[in-house]
Image (cartoon, rainbow, N blue to C red):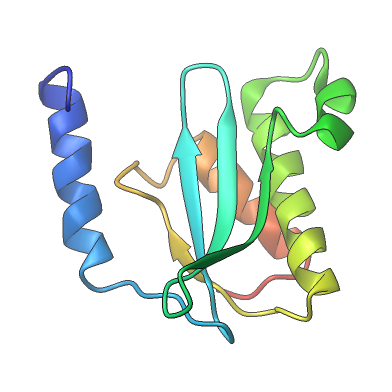
Length: 121
């Protein structure tokens, strides 16, 4: 349940985009969620209804290395980590789902990190 008008607007954008964006096993959907303190990314196969890989600023392998970094720098590292996990599974191409968030700031940094890590979208 949305708490305010801003969140309601984001959820409406999310629904509008989700009607068009679908992930498959060959080209999963790279979904991004950002909270005030953290950012999360997961690769989802919508046809099989399974999550292929996930990474966030709370991932144990990343958490210690992110101390003292800005949020956008941490988001870039999360993008590189999700790219690394997907490349291990043999996935190079993804569909980017910004989840209703504006393609700016941390969301943009995560996508740039994923591209630097070797993903195509």
